Figure 1 (cartoon, rainbow, N blue to C red):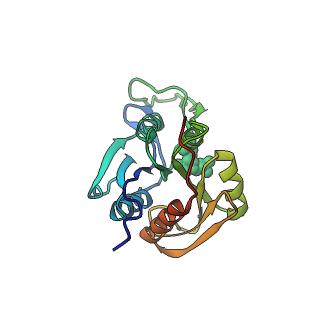
Figure 2: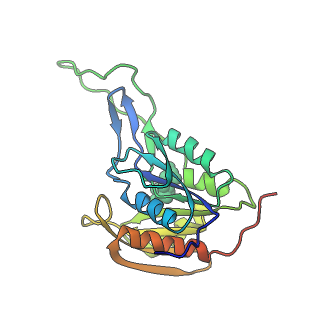
Figure 3: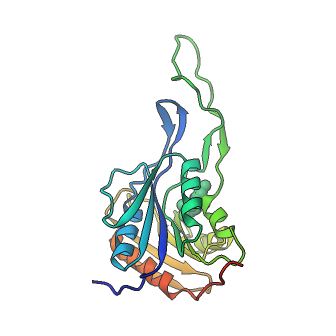
Length: 226
Ligand code: C5P
């Protein structure tokens, strides 16, 4: 049983992976299971928070006590997060967001035709939701937390990303070798803007989630937006 150290706080968490449609039946997607985001939601409820979970294409049981908002595309996730984050105390972007989307979505199913080469898929950039949420208001009240999966120089890349995205905490996973995506366990470092690092050893995603909430609780009080 945890201390109710998130009591009275509204936390908004994104989980899963966004999908970008190519046509009515096909999409570009990623391998994110949503398990880390769901572990964050369960542990936040256990620590007394009011929890909104924006879930992109997950197939996991709803965490008891959380409000779940299902979404699919990056634009849907952006809208749901932006809406839920206004007035929230903590915002955590644990979802794997598609960096690019097809510039054009076919209205009918793309057909193969004998002797005809397929059309190339032209991509355009998606907005960076985390950076947008972190920049929303200069004196924002919310603690904003991002995730980063890095393959090399995880700590240095993570530090640079923390600054670039403008968030308060960044959870850096070293990925590769079957770690992190879809697995039950995770290993990470939680970085803050004061040079602090919390190393979380390889273990259940709940343990990493609790380390994230410990770091959130330890963040200095924020300026209320004017
Ligand atoms: O830039 P990168 O994809 O490594 O950043 C990962 C972090 O940024 C995650 O917290 C992810 O949810 C968020 N993100 C986002 N919008 C994007 C891409 C990533 O919010 N378009």
